[in-house]
Length: 142
Image 1 (spheres, rainbow, N blue to C red):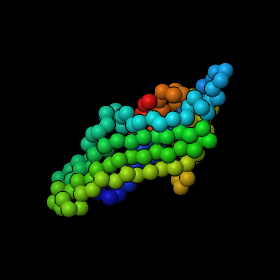
Image 2: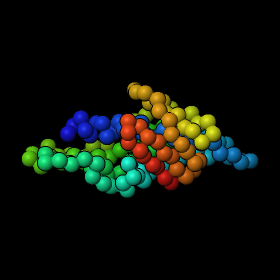
Image 3: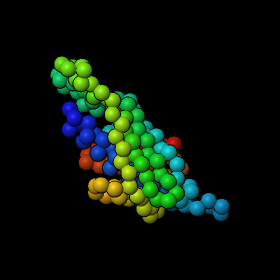
Image 4: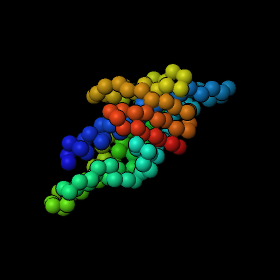
């Protein structure tokens, strides 16, 4: 289960790679993009939901967020609950965090993970960020 939890966290963190530019007389594109985008769906499922389950246990995604800062850095967090049916004492909640930088070109955002690969997604500034990473599709909405 531990590798499943890490895999989910990595996929979600990678998934948070979406941004776009915004224009206005008094708001820079970075200011329009900057903010906290809560996780709305993962693979079409509304959060919270069961990501994986078998006879040994289950993994639930409880919540998550993508914070885009005007200095073009980001932090993505994912709160995951691991339940072990045959060893409940091993069950736990984890908050997995990914940090890095991002670049926005039009409606495309490219995330450069601090300790991992780059990935890309799409952004509607101030509204939503979406991406697919390692087969998992994530949507963050304000």
